Image (cartoon, rainbow, N blue to C red; front, side, top):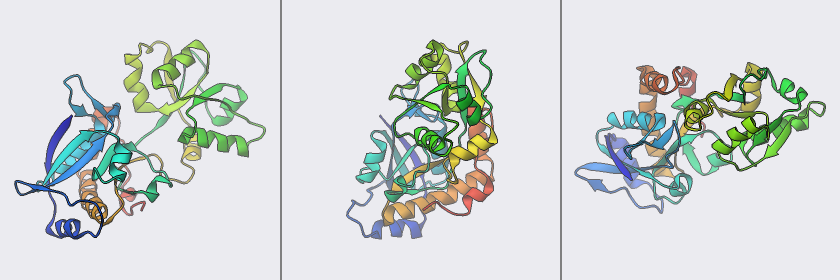
Amino acid sequence: MKNKITGILTLAALTAVFTAGCSKKENPVAGGKTIVKAVTTARVAPYTFIDEAGNVTGSDIEIVRAIFDRLPQYELKLEVGDALQGVLSGQYDFAVNNYGYAEKRAESYYYSYPYKVGYDVYIQRKGDRPIISLSDLAARKYKTEVGPGSFKAIALERWNETHPDEQISLIYSDANFQVKFQNIVDGKSDVAIDDGPIFKTLIPKFGLEDKLVPNPLSASDRDFFINGKDSTGSYLLFTKDSKGLALRNEINVIIKQLKKDGTLSKITTKYFERDTSPADEKFEKTLN
């Protein structure tokens, strides 16, 4: 499936793109517009997904469209595919898929400014006493299901290493969200720590609105998971070459404009019922 959107490239950036010394092919030009190819998996609702009409949509997709509305000399082709590998191979110019920051990933991709921030919640059985901290979670000896190698698993393993008297019981599983949430209902696990908007989007589809509830993480818990990294932001990922750098820098100018004029606030509030646009200081320096 392919969607087209139109956008702009300044003469300086256009020159940088076409004179970039790299092995990847130059972007074609159609009708006087430079074609830029973006990719998403379209499997992370409400961020990127395919709606009932078969269109690629979501908060992240709407933000990308808003970016290219201000870049009218680009023709953006948005495709569904293997996002990370597609950009790494040079098949696509950038990926949009609610990507957070990972130090290892930054070795292979340029990161844009963040265009929104996320928030996690404790997901528990309805009627269960809300967890108030990771220490509380450990004290209850609750079983927590995590994906092997996931950010949450790595963070909770770090907790167990540094809190020998407050061990959190981890269940490793590659189960999808529906199975993971059902496991809490069935008592196979007791809690999950997951993305709040994803929970809100999926729980009605699974018919579990009366079974599970989200409870907020404390400020100290949020700080623990961030661990000094800007892992709560969502970023566009670009090819790590001179062409990708030029495109990233051009798009960053527009992302900053969208923050300043309230567009990011408007779109995130539409999807999440709260303003999750990044703080102003997040637009002062890129991550790489």
